[in-house]
Image: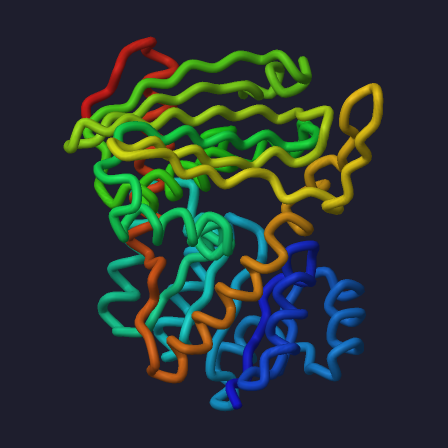
Length: 328
């Protein structure tokens, strides 16, 4: 049984707490959060300890850490965990500054501890099946990939100011998916964006609607479509076109019942948001990390993947500001 210290008792921490407690090989050993009320609620629910950062990191009974705290704490906590020989699961991103990410990964390399970065969409059963079918040769060589990602509603402007911007906060998942599906590193990127959804987002210096085009060495093209607003639920789709056919992964709906009549078809909306849409993905990524801790696997999604996704976000922003394609 692996004892896990959970850093962060907020919304995403609650999701991970369920995965930890539900897995037969892991135990939610302790909770670390500066907001004592949140920590106490979660600790009481799972009969876990409440620890400080220092206590959790130095506790020999803590085998692994799951970092789901505020973004600006991730790199520091990863380094502390590495120095204390803890196995590390960290929510994306490692940090919002590329140089700081590189410093952090150097520490992880020095202490030779496993680091898994939680790009959970890789573990969605639909997306993973699409990738596996593609790599099994079902549609031949990839020619174009369209990634559609639209949130149901924009976050508050206060969040935007600390998020690192749309590309580092939201599109970073899509940059990772593009690399994951195509299986190559892009060689050029071009981005355009607008502020159409919420004027407060524009006032905070960000965009809420974006199109990004990436080109890969094989000639394959990837188009990413992002919006902070969707009037019909959480819109998450992939379309991969190849020389011999097409693979698509559509939205997961609130239910699969359809009502057909004289006026056409009425069906349910897509799942409301990421907690519902990617429920299975969170479970699957934790199962993979347990395999890593048990020595049955090595991390499929590493610090290098986190670094590369942030690099693409930075280059997309450079393209947006310059109006030019950026060679990578």
